[in-house]
Length: 457
Image (tube, rainbow, N blue to C red):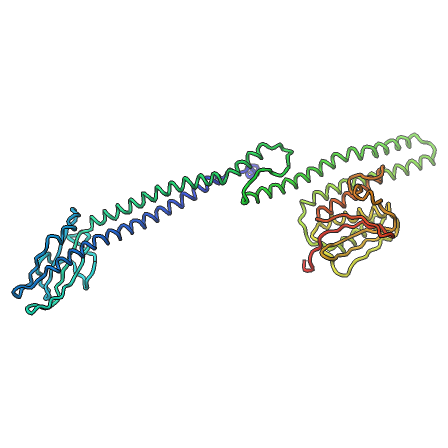
């Protein structure tokens, strides 16, 4: 079950997702366009046919006259010529006298209360009507004559559908063209991802260099994250390789020396000489253990530089803890502490910083001159923790080389000292700081300096 969940699932490609999204947009847009086109077509058809109805009604109203005291309507043929172009539609009309009597036309037509266009039915079929009133003020007849003209809506429905169909067709063609352009644009936009995938697929497993593929800004965030990840992996691999490379080379000689002294001691019968040999074996064993501890410490610090999140750390606590731990190991007696009243905080890893200070202290106690002290200070945005001793310290010409692994004098102790400074330099680099050496004429200073957090951090 766990193996199945660990297998990465193949998800739909970005192209497929975009295609589906565009398809949904076009379908939704096409539906909206079709509805809008149908509504527009109906409105346009109604407007056109309504004008014809109004024209026919007005012509009939103009033909109303009073002769011999009677209402006469001589309907002109032109009144229905345009309406008759809709061959499948039926046309009805009615002219009503002021007293409500039907003068001519069809009885029982749907009537409106006022003039204007309204809907109704003609023998069960949907129809559109118009009512126009004409005011008569003759001596023999006075009042309002009402003219109603109606027509079924089959022709106008067909016209509305034709308009809507053409609009949808044109919109569909335009939509397909736009979809094609969108897919081409998407493919071009995603081309850098394809180049990136091809580049990564052809890389060797040990190649952890930054990705050289040029990508757009949006994808650049991904590539920058990938570069940072590979840089972290490279640091871890380098630390592992350094440990594996240094361990056989640096440990083989002292181990061989201890073995040789042990073999000589086994054959030695003189108690005084035997005691001297055991002392040398013990000293070499101590130095060898210290060297192994520092090698492991350096690998651990490089690992923590990427694996441990940064947190606010008070350098005063780091200094006190380092002095206390060195004192417990039997070498920190008489180490002075110079601490400010206010906290000096940095964003870092307390364990790595403590290891760095302990290595500086160990070197000062082993190779420097008493008194040895640890000082913490902070000013102008920079935090400093330094170890001081009264000796001459490292010669100025060797300050740069002193921070490389196993630089300096020969022998396990000197190698241990060089590795200790290398550990401090690695901690400084991980904290965006520096390791500096100086001599004020009285004391030698080994200073670890890094950015300081604000007072509210």
